[in-house]
Image (cartoon, rainbow, N blue to C red; front, side):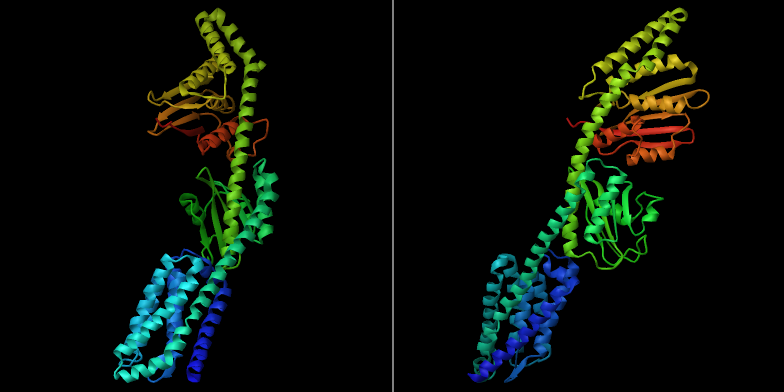
Length: 554
């Protein structure tokens, strides 16, 4: 009995060594992340298989020799691996360690029983992983481990020759090997405590994300380059990052930290990592990136910002040291990105209201603009004596133009009604400027769609006033409405002086002066309603502006 107790103590010592090794691994950040997960990549499963296979093989080599058998805790390692990481880890670990046990003692009295029960243990551990709740796995692991060791003893009794040798071996090792399976429960509980730590970390990081959201909330009331830069600064300081950036789907809206001087000159998105995140909607992580555009950046995480399920930008966090993107940082960054997405969506709703108010104000200003009305009446007066029919047409155009503005509502209107208002406006301007202005229409008959009011007319007015009339000689404005299947593309092209690249950038980043809101207002309204704003292109001669309107599903 004393000999049996000594064997039990030695087995528990070896199990304790396994337990201590696992504890150390759970403190190493890269391994800790694996133990904290509940879903694993093939690479992580491979790492877990290697770890527990090495544990099982080491257990065999450190076994205690008793009457030609090796008393060890191999079953403990196999059972723990399968319960913690799933059937593939359990079965492969069982197969590898079982075959190893057989090969190092071919012909041994216990080699075949150990091979069989090692494989069975791997299968049983996978079943426990699949069918037992996490809270009860440690208990199931102990019972299953004891059952597998009991099966080993039974196989030894059946296969041993002579039978008396089998009885002698089992009488000495059965009790300590079966009781040592208590170690399975200890190992499972150790790793599960790491998973519990994950929940506590997630809670702390969620609180940090909430604190950051509270600090940045005032800056979401008016989203512009300055406010976004302040938001990035707060995030960078609170999480200890080396750089933080916020983008939309095309431009880097704000960048703070290392490498900032580069983005002060060029803010178009160029990194493939960001493009991948924006196109796929999935998080991109690089923990040891040596090929990034900025040679100082070694770790990065890029999280998509979504509004109503559509990717509208990205939050990017950078570090100059490798392996800084830990599980806790991921949890915080994901929570923070969700809050930022919500705040930006709320801000956009407020922007829609503000833009609607500005559009209404613009419409009111157009209705009562004394210069426009005075010039229109002058054109009519000039035509009365020379061309009375033309004067009558201009009066009809002016009355139609004014009636449209007086009947203006927030509802969407048929595009043909909007185009009719544009025609009234154009005829009045053509009467004023004569041969200096030529307007062409390229309208598809099948292009039927409803659009917000006062979307096209301000763009035509911008093309005439800031494009044609600022140049010398005559100019042409082409208004196109083209059917594209599931959408309609609306375009306004002129042959005027051409818009400046600086003005285009100001429209995109929201830094247009308050007294020049016409083009910017239309861009913002289109972007807020349809998800993507105006596409503004400076031509060799003139400007081309287009935007797409999705057709309503019927």
